[in-house]
Amino acid sequence: MLYLKLFILSFLVFQPSLTFQQWDANSNNLISRYEFHEMYTQNFYNDWDKDNNGIVNKEDFLSKIYVVWDIDNDNLISDTEWHEGFENNYADFVDIEYFAIDTDGDGMLNFKEYIAYVEDMPIFETWDMNKDEKLNEFELSRMIFNLWDIDDSNFISVGEYQAYNNYYMNI
Image (cartoon, rainbow, N blue to C red):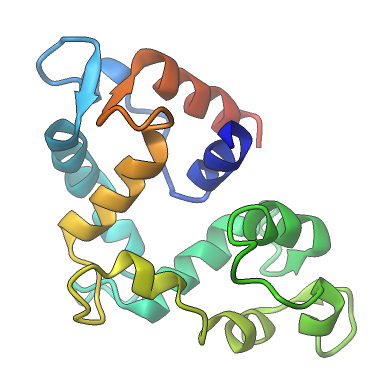
């Protein structure tokens, strides 16, 4: 379970340039939901808004995941990238093998193939708590916080932060 949560964290677009101390505004060695929300929305919410219209909709959300899972930045998702980014995190949603999604048979998923498969999955809908077909700052930061909070304590400890940061730096 720890590995799964750590890998999910890898696609959530955390910039390691921020230190734990910057996230921990009250210096109590814990990042609260409020501290996380303030820092995340101030620094990262707009990264999810692909078309810069102030709304993170399903297209923005799925596009950002595609970009982040494309670890080698070749605009394609390899079998390894798919397994690392999708099957390890969303096994409940995956019901066919990679080669079946790769409809042109070139061994790589382009954006069109990726979207054709994932657009009808309820991944976005599980994050969209108020069901308005967009992720507001609260929804996005809440879901990401829940993933970072490995022990479900409602705080991110120095250890959880370091586990994520160490993992992210080794991708």
